[in-house]
Image (tube, rainbow, N blue to C red; front, side, top):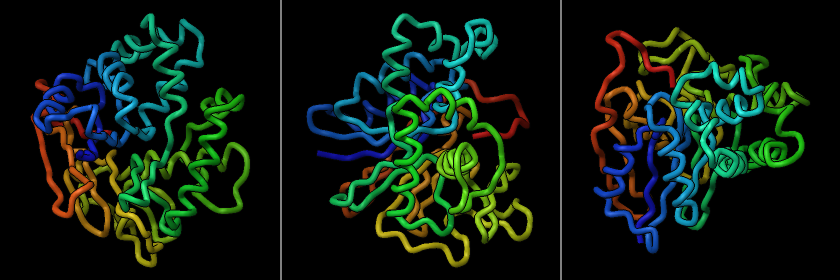
Length: 283
C-alpha cells in the first residue's frame, strides 16, 4: 500500500493519467490525497473531475478556490453559466453535472489522518490556528456547504475582507475561513492575507511572510500537504509540503508518497501548451 499526495490538477487530465501510471496506482491497494483545484484552466476539467470522482473510494480531496468557484457558478442562472470559460462550461452542461457537483460540494476543506501523522489543506492555515482549531473552523463551513445554507454561503464567499478574527460571525466569518484555507500565500504576523502577492518568496513586500514562516505561528502536531502556490513550486520545510508545481502553466504535476519514512517524489510534465509569455500564475 502507498499513500500519495498530489498537487493541483486544474483540469489537466492527460498529466493526471500519466502521473497515476508512473506511480503505478492500484485503487485496490493505494490511496490518493488531492490537494484541491481539480478544475479550471487546463482544458479538460470535465474529464479530470470524472476521473477523480471515479476514484472516490480510494481517494480524498480538499476543496480549492477554483472548485468552490465552480460550485458557486453552478448556482447561477443558465445564461450566467454560459458566460464562463469553455473549460468550466463543459462541467456545467455535462449530463452528469449534478452527480459530479453534488459529490464535489461535500468534500472537506481540511483532511487529517492522525494515524498517518498528516493533514491536507488547499492553500494554508492562519498563523494562530493549531491543528484542532483548523479542523474546527473547517467543519463550520463544511456543515453549511453540505446543508441548506450552501447557496447563501457560495453567493457570499467572494471578497478579500474581513481578515480572520475569532470574533467574526455570519458571512464574514465564513468568507474569512474560506480565504485562509483556499487563498492563503503571504500574510502579516497578525494573519492579514496579502492577496495581491503571488510571486515566489523574496518578491513580497516588507512585513509579509509565507504563511508557514510567520513569527509566533502555532505549533502543529501533523505534517501538512498543500497546493495552490505554483510560483513557490515544490517546497518542503517547516512541516509543510507544498505540491503545486504549475502543471497547468507548463510545469510539472507532482505526487509525494507520505506513508513512508523516506519521502518519495514523482513528477510528470504538465500541460503541453504553456500560458502566454509573461502571464503570472494566479493560483
